Length: 394
Image 1: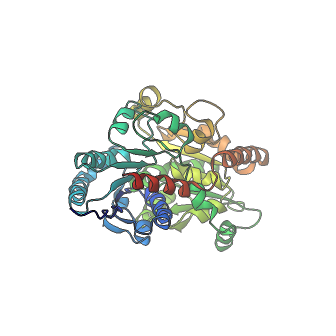
Image 2 (image 1 turned 90 degrees about the horizontal axis):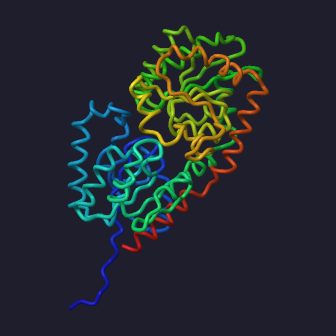
Image 3 (image 1 turned 90 degrees about the vertical axis):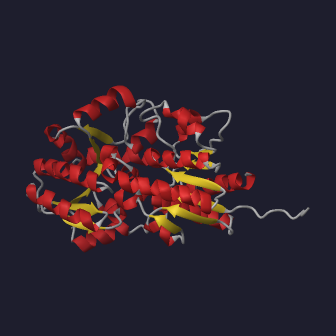
C-alpha cells in the first residue's frame, strides 16, 4: 500500500453575484494567493474577479437585483444553479466560498452541502436587519463564517460553526486611493473654489437607478439651487444607466454632469451626497461626506420593515457600524422613502448640510468618529489568514 501523502486540495469554488461582492472577493483572493501560491479558484464573479486571473464560469453581477426584481431573471439564476452543481461534481473543490447575497448564495450552500463540500461565508447574511430566524439556517449550511461587522460575531456565536470577525474590507480598498482624487475631478468639471458640488449616487442596479434617480432629482429641484454656486454630478456605474439618469434630470429641469464608471473620485470631490442605501454610503463615510441615504419602498415594504423584519432601527451601514444593532445617535441621515411627497420635509436638512458650515462640521465630526473606530485597514489580510487556516484544516 502506498504511503505517499496526498497533495492538498487547493481549489476554491466561489460566488460573488453583486458588484460590491465582486470587488471584495477579488481583494480577499489576492491576499489569499500570496499566502497560498498553489491556490486555484473559479466560479461566479465580475470584471474585478476576472482581473485576478479567476476563470469566470458566469458573470451574474450585471443582472443583480433587489427585492422581487430577481423574478425577471429567474431563468438565468436557474441556469447558474445547474452550472454550479456541475462544477461541484467536476471541479471537486476543497471548499465553496460565498460572498453576501444570501437569497441566491444559500441555494448554492445547500447544493454544496448536498455534494459534501464545506461552505465558507464571507460578509454574512444580515439577520439583524430582517428575518433573524435565518440564523439557524445559516449555521446549518456553513462550516466557517467571516462577518465584517463587529456585533455579528456575538450574534452568530455557537458551539459548532467557527465564527471569526475579520473587519470591514472597505478601509483596505479606499486607503490605497490617491489623495488628490477629488481635486482632479473638480478641476476637470470646472468646479470653482467657491462652488458646492452635489454628488448623486443612485445605485449599482438598474432597478435602483430607475427608482431613485427621479426622487433624487425631485429633491434637488425643490432646493432651488443657485447655478452660480452649486453643481450636480451623477454617478453612472454602467453605460446603460446614462440614458435613465439624463431623462430623469431633464424631467426636473436640472443640468447635471454624468460621471462614468468608478464613482470614488466623485465621492471624494462632492460636498453633499444623495445616495442609495448600500456599500456606497460606507464609502462616502470614509471620505467624510455629509449625506442623505435613501431606500425606496412601497407601503407594504415599509410596514414589514418597521414591524416585522428589522431587529435594528437602522438600515444604513454607517449607522449600523456606529450604533451597533441598537438605537443611538445616527451617524448619517437615512430615510425609508415611500413616496416623493415626503421629500419636501427634507429640504431644510439638505440645504443645511450643503450650505450651513456649522451643520456640515457636525456631520463631518460624526463621520470622523466612525472612521477612526470602525474603518481601519487590515480586514483583507485577516480574512485571508482565517480562510487559509481553515483550508489547511480540512
